Image 1 (cartoon, rainbow, N blue to C red):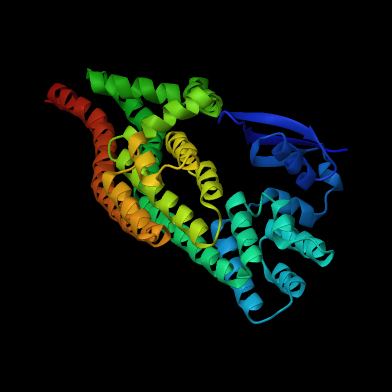
Image 2: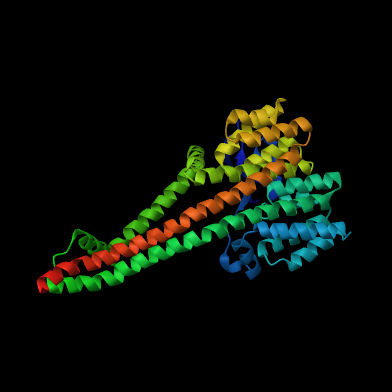
Length: 408
């Protein structure tokens, strides 16, 4: 019988790992849920022989399902369901035409299970690597309410908005990152290959070398020797230690607090988290998912432990009859504007509509913040690149003055 490892949250709200033995992934998840755990992620542990895998299986293991892939699938699936195409046939058609190997394999297995009488949401729940808890919960709500095509359209719109925001951030950061990489490459190339040529000339002429030139020659010697791997090893070890620390509850909470307080980036992280919370929560409640379940899903998909803790505390207060806006206000994590608009939504009975408006507003704020950050980083990176080149040129040309004095 296979063994599964799951990331779960217990009744006290603590994250932990649990191991369970079961016939299928669905039964493993069901067993953990019956024990009172909220399952965040679960996967099968198995040793496999790479040579025994087919090319299709290997491709499915090495790829991941992106937000754009799920958005396209949702839009096409909704159109087919709305047009009256049988669900099994629609899944088979979409599986044949998708270019993502992992999604293709998941859809093929889901189609088989649906054909055998399994609910679509239950079949999708067995493939968390393709369809997360949020997606499955919305599909389940659509099945229960008989509005699956409408829910799938909302899912497609939701995923398209997320993909658009991600693309905006990636596109805005592409130029500064490219210039930064170029600056490092130019600096290393000139230090490793150009400095030694001039060092030989200066040595033959017996020139008096200034401190900057001596430092650059020393740095060039290090970069051309085995000692150059020391900083690389230090970076790898530092990255590994950081990842291990971040996996601990204390480390994750500490670092996520730092991320929200960083100059320039902290404000961007906060606005992104608010936009994600409002968009996800609004989409779930509008699709008929119960508010407590929606808060639980949003908590697990928040991406920041500080915000996840605030949502979890608010969920417990809502469970006891409190108002969501007041509960979030006590946590002092969300901006006052977002809290006030949520409060108005609760008072008017249109919380989902108000959440969507808040999400639209903060997504625009994120876009503007990214543009502002880029406008700062672009000239800054050019200055850094110029400074690196200038340091190398100065280190090469300063000794020339003492040489010219001797010649004179």
